[in-house]
Image (cartoon, rainbow, N blue to C red):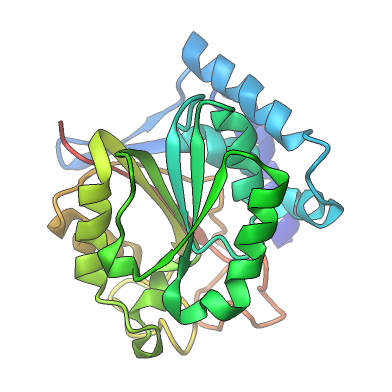
Length: 264
């Protein structure tokens, strides 16, 4: 049922030129938008080429049906020549898609937290060996520095983890460091497992979920402007009461995809 629902959402989204449905803020309310611009069509073409890149492993392709990469990547606004930071990419599902999209003139920084570097740095090194425009970066997330201003910072299913004390991350400082790393007009895109209304960050360790409104408020406190959300990974059949690793919902959780912009 959940897979069918998500497939239905994907099919509906595919009829929109952007491949995604955006909910954008509108004077305190919300509006459904389905962009049809030529620029969006070009973005779809670039993403389609990235999806068919022969360097992608079969394990990544097998995950596409649930991860909705066409819709997600179009929503990120990533373009050729962009400099993108992929925060804690682990095996690199999205890094492998970003690299062909930004092309030879762009860069993808595979940002590995110091705390998990022993296990995850080899993944980043392997990505760099395969893609000449991928640059491994190891450091503290709340002290991130880059050699050039970034166009996009991307984080998938990781933000909630950084509220877990064992990670040793000051989330407010992390968001401010990301703000400082972006060029004016740069984008901060976050995907995470949705928590129930009112739970805030109280279930980040037990269920690995975070309330969307709570996360949004934290990011806005760093100076970002909320620009919109994609429903590509929404799943109303997920009651959000069990861990994301529970076999009844694993891989099919209700997730929000938020896009924030640095003013300027």
